[in-house]
Length: 211
Image (cartoon, rainbow, N blue to C red; front, side, top):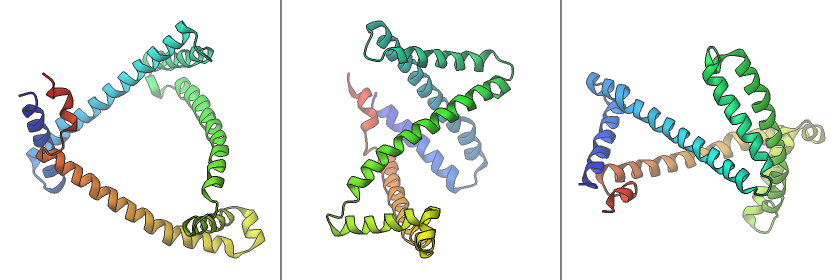
């Protein structure tokens, strides 16, 4: 029973979503939008809540045990509860101008700082990946040189053809590859969905099979 009920629920929910996507049936469309789509929102909310509790528990443990760099846990918890309480008690909540100002000022600036720091790691990994040790690595290196040179003003100053070659590579080679990758991943997702619907894939039932 513990395995059969989840399989039946999975099949019914999946089959209803398939009907909602391919057929215009008012009852099915209304049921899917009113209940199934809300269940996705509820699941995401629960996942976010559990993640928040896990972060708090982890950093409280860092502080109590005085782990390495535990001082930063004070900063994280302070801003976490400040933004949480502000979003709840302020008028208009997360649309309050003060809340928006604090979020934009800190979030945008810190994200830019972290991204700028990660660029050094990207440059280091790119240097290791672009070593021309094989034909594939050589082609990757040549394509990267043309794309990078065509994306910066210095490249156009060196040779006016860099932007043209860069645009050609991005438009035809890159777009074609990304579309092929998208089609392949879509087919893989479709096959996984079919496996879940017919009960071949039972990985999500492992917790219910014990006992």
